[in-house]
Image 1 (cartoon, rainbow, N blue to C red):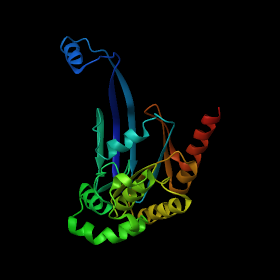
Image 2 (image 1 turned 90 degrees about the horizontal axis):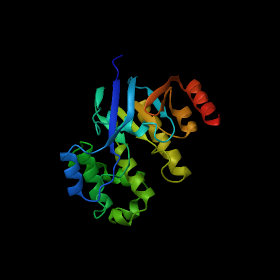
Image 3 (image 1 turned 90 degrees about the vertical axis):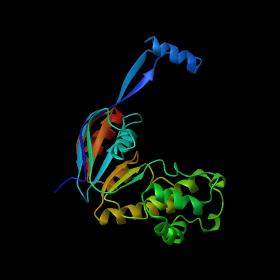
Length: 245
């Protein structure tokens, strides 16, 4: 079966300035003179993986391991410094939900805007608006500016829009912790429904329960490198053992 996602020897570097400057002018002068001292941080370092249609791959690791960076590379938000990423089909990226919302616009207006960012037509989004708002449980706040929403309400709205259609590839980064326990269960059920429809899924989570319930294989990242890739039970057990030691 042709993979929906292929990550081939991907490396991604962040260049961090080690010296502090007081002004942009001072920085520009130092840069012109070649006096800018930069440290290269490899957020991803030689990552290889494949995800086939209908498969759920979990990504785990400590903070700073490169998990979110990997998701952004697959979503084409960040270009890799080296290597190649191939994604076949339409992508729904549930990363930093609500990041594209305009705080001065209402939920109704933002649904149309967010849908456009996901490549959906205005007509389609207007038709889907009532169902999206109802699923997010925001019927009473549909014409309220987003700036008046709590962070949880914003994330719920973003999740409802992003998960409202079946994509070929789903990227889920710590979004199943949105809201209270009832809403979390509702969100997880929607993920199961989308997975059942044949999407290739990559899910990042610190919750080993979520990873174990959703995933078939797990990628363990450590300092941007692949520490382990294999069946969920084996990788989760090894990862948890490393955290205890």
